[in-house]
Length: 122
Length: 133
Image (cartoon, rainbow over all chains, first blue to last red; front, side):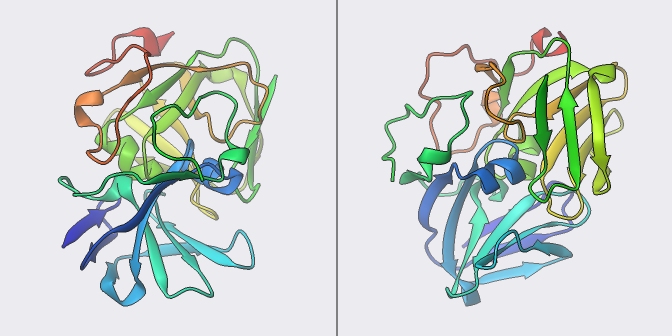
């Protein structure tokens, strides 16, 4: 089981089972909200147990984005038509047992960095 | 001048004057708040022009530091040390064309275990003083 929390500790969560789809997202929404790029994994929604005060922002009609109301940590992403919950890899306690699998939305990446870590681009 | 904003637009700003090269920070605080690691420039406080600050909220992250985010969309925006007349600003919130680049990695001893730092940029276990420029 993996455990995660925000910066201030108000929001905590656990993930039972494997962390799937570890990725770094370079889309402009994730870049703005994270302040750089967002890393996440996902699991079936019922296996991600969240406690604490999460604020949700609907930046598009297809998904909602969750963050800690007190410290602003960008923690969760949930597509309305999927039964999985994504959570930030930066909020997981070490050891995570996770390895990045892919970079996504690389066409939208920022112009101040390069992607050259050998992780596949999708 | 470079413009920036949060995801929802309720915090919007421009930067003028000298902008420090971007530092990627891998400390635990930055990793938790951003969700991966944080990349940010730094400007004199007077060179941050807040055009909209409706959603701007400050979290007291230590007895020396405030971290600014948008309470409407959760965007990570600013880092403000009490003792310094400068403010640190998210690179991801800036429009393209700033001319800035990531120049180094800091606090790599605290980095996450699920990624590698694979570029040839200088790395530091903590900060070195260059962040104060």
